[in-house]
Length: 411
Image 1 (cartoon, one colour):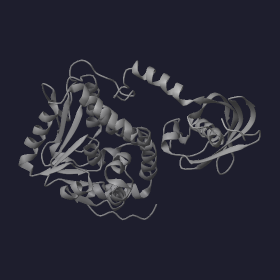
Image 2 (image 1 turned 90 degrees about the vertical axis):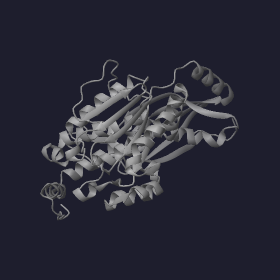
Image 3 (image 1 turned 60 degrees about the horizontal axis):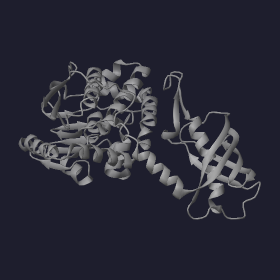
Image 4 (image 1 turned 180 degrees about the vertical axis):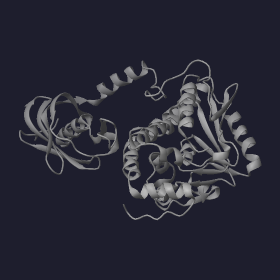
């Protein structure tokens, strides 16, 4: 460790509170609940401020790690607020350094406490960590909040499932309603994903829609009939389902055979691969109903970038399959009669790959992308619910049901 560190020196770190560092208190929404900066997030901010204070004094091959912390969380801070961590050196004992730590938002002090860090040699630390990793099983691909089903395939009403050896074919089966996602289909998906998680011998899943649509979104009539708390819970359930696709042991392929809008578009791009027919259409039209997408924006931005995602969601415009291909939203576009055989051929090719390597490749690619940013669905649902509770959203729903253009008044 280099010389020069003195008592009283301070490290400062400023963050903006992102969704990954929040927690839902109470009812997870506007009915008595709140989304706030979490205590672990505040502790991390103050610890990292101390780390920043030590960084200029570390030799190559050294790092500092936290070994003790005591904190008080003094006040709540909302999502998107700017917060500041400060760490002042109070004592030095060789390679152990003590800090007085504090955290502030733009209005007040939100936390305080004490913290000790140790300066370590990275070579020994890394060697021990590699040995531990070699003895550990890889992390589960399955979302802990959902139930794994190891028995027979549950009874499903809005999804049709055919399992042939290592291949499962799933059809959204509400063709007269353009396969929109209602409460029953949401429950069916929860059961089916739980079953897939418990049956890794099924290695590839194909998802498509019955009739002339893949999925035209969430059932607006269902949303209109729900109170705000129930609508929020439904959005959170659907968000977790979309994230669960990438954590399944199977490779999931979307065969997009027509309309793919809103929640249906999210369902398609949440799959690992997306093939589209030439007549397929994609869009995120929620804004035309008076609210933003309730989930799925992190996946969309990862696929097509912020500028394209903004264009799709702010305009509510639809794009063709060829435009979706150009943007990176789909992998391949083929004529509708060829969609099924092309997708099945690709699925069969995947089945020739070694099973463990296929699962692990999917796992590490999604893990490298980072799971934490996808917790933005909490903020997305929060924004969706706030807008759903406005007069403009009620007008958007009424206009949709009455098949007329809405008149928004900014209320």
